Amino acid sequence: MAKFINYLQTKSFRNNLLAAIATVAILLFIAFFSLRYYTKHGQGLNVPAVKGLSFNQAVSKLEDLGLRYEVDSVYIMDMPPGTVIDQDPEANTFVKDNRTIYLTINTAQAPNVKFPEIQFKSFIEAQSIIHSFGLKVGDTVYKADISKDVVLEVSFGGQAIKPGDVIPKGSKIDMLLGDGRGNEDVDIPALLGFTKGEAAFSLRGSNLKLGTITYEGAITDTANAVIVAQSPALTDSVSKVKIGTPINITLSNKK
Image 1 (spheres, rainbow, N blue to C red):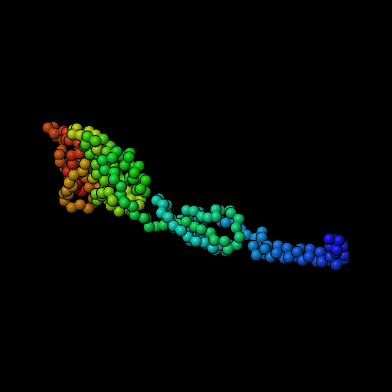
Image 2: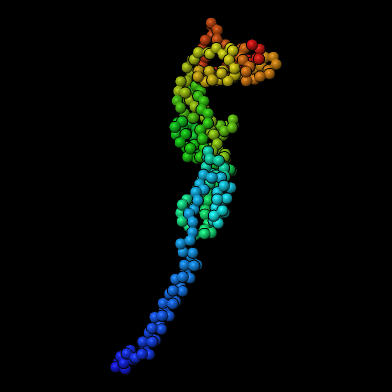
């Protein structure tokens, strides 16, 4: 023990200790500055805001700053295809050069969904189900039926559809609903002089529907052709029909 204590007091020990401390300090110095160089400490940039831009605009912005990117896609209704809907990291995040920015793009191709069961459900319930499947409510038409605001028939693109049918997400679903008035009679509207569009609007307001359309003479302008005859017609002896009755019309370009 005495020899060890005497050794600690020698010049040789002090020189070795100083050499060891200097070596450790040099190694730490080299490691620190090497790490700073490798990680480019303090060097970087803020991520640009590309959310809401088109894909091409976003890529141009990122490449100008030397940033890389990777792309994923989802489908969102009512948003232009090719639009950036999300980015990671967020805008103004400080990152290193050559960092990868992850972009989420709205795809143009709508995914398919299986149509749900909504027939004979209330309109409010059917509307909620349709929205939950990523679909939209299209036209709603009423017919005479004791069931009020109950879905009687459903169609897509003018064709009847049933549960399980595959249709594109975002499609509009047309529904035929009961008006709860059953066999109630309504007044026959006078349609003479109306265009087809005006007649259809008037009939909907009366809970009637447009029936067979015939044409008289040469039709040069369908949109402006007017009704010159209807059946059933409003007469002194006939003034009412059942709700949902089709009204047949004849169109002509003659004034």
